[in-house]
Structures are given as structure tokens and as C-alpha cells.
Length: 103
Image (tube, rainbow, N blue to C red; front, top):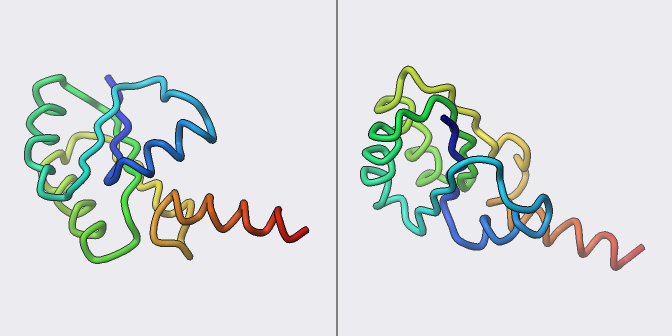
């Protein structure tokens, strides 16, 4: 019914470190080139909600657009809004760790 999609493997590992295993299906793309395969899987499994952890760059924006176009009936949560000043979830986490070490 729901899925958590990560653009990269390090973002998935960061998520596991911070919050543990998601209570949904997990897809790690490792490349935006895998987006078509992911969409096929999500459609086949009738996923209705997606939490998308993408990069804050042009490839990540393209991924978000592709998912919105291909899965219009799915509730798509763009988690990149949670780390707007960082490239991705992992970079955000590393920056927080560095701040703690300096304190």
C-alpha cells in the first residue's frame, strides 16, 4: 500500500541510522535511470503512497516530475523538502553530525 523510495543507497543507510527500517516497501534506485523499473513495480503492487527521498539537483527534480507524471493517483511526499539546503538526506545528516562535534 505504501513505499519509501530512495534515489541513492547512502540515503537509505542514513535513513536506517536515523529512524530504523521504514514501515513500508523500500526501493533504492542507485540511479535515476532505474525510475522506469521502479514505476512498473509500484504500479504492479498498487502502491498508493510514496515517500520519495531524492537529491536536491536537476536529476532529483526530474525524478520527482517523472513519478508525478507516471503515478498521478498516488500520494507522493517529496521528502527533499525536509533537507532543502543540502544535496540529499545523507549530506544533511553529516552536516548535523559536524555541528554536534563542534559543540
